[in-house]
Length: 300
Image 1 (cartoon, rainbow, N blue to C red):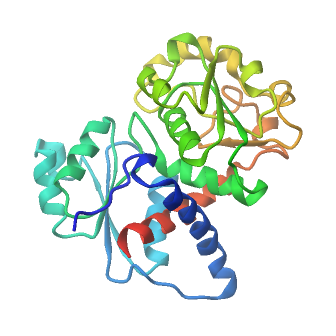
Image 2 (image 1 turned 60 degrees about the vertical axis):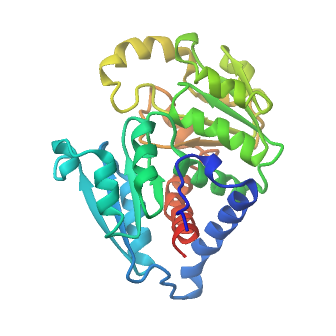
Image 3 (image 1 turned 30 degrees about the horizontal axis):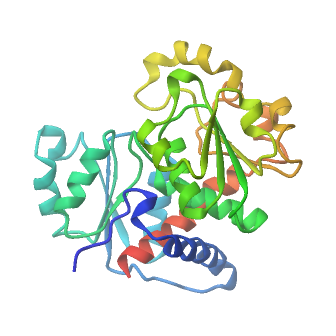
């Protein structure tokens, strides 16, 4: 039987995604009941990262350990991938030795090629195009704090980047309204905009996008690999800073999220990210629980 992969949010059905979020919440509450649960006993997760990581790496490794499994971390600096071995060859060999592979890389095409030749599930731990694992944690966090996200309005303020793309897909899969505000030079992928137009609207003015929002989310202005563009991007994105004045246009009980790391004073002010509406720390913790649920779905 062919393995199931998680390369974008579209790899799972709407029903599967809803069940996965509910399961993540169940798994989160298990330690409070002193329940021992080791579904990954004798299972091994290979973690291949070409980009740096804190939350993603720690959450995957912790998820495996707490559920009885193990993980092996590989960077391109200490594996044959860094010396030019074809991706499909690495996939063929590695998938004969481990039970699951999670990959963080630049091009989406690389992870899709790996999955094509893998005998075991492959998880997208971030590419330049999307970051689906983060959206699982984001949806879980919203559900925990406010209930069902269906029919709600979410505002994405800032770069039309991989996180924005994943929010666009999430809008379709979880049936919410997404309002995106970004500079004209940094809009999300046009094909994806067309695919998701039933749920997604694009604005140049952040005050229009955020009006009446139930959730406000943003990200750094320069992602990994874009550091040389920092100065130019700072000028373009300055009007898109999420501050108290902008948050005041959202609903009074609106939540604020950020996938982290955050640059206070740039894309968000300290008073917002450290304020009462912010749930970024719950959001970060939920990377662990939602990924446990994802691993359980793919491995068990």
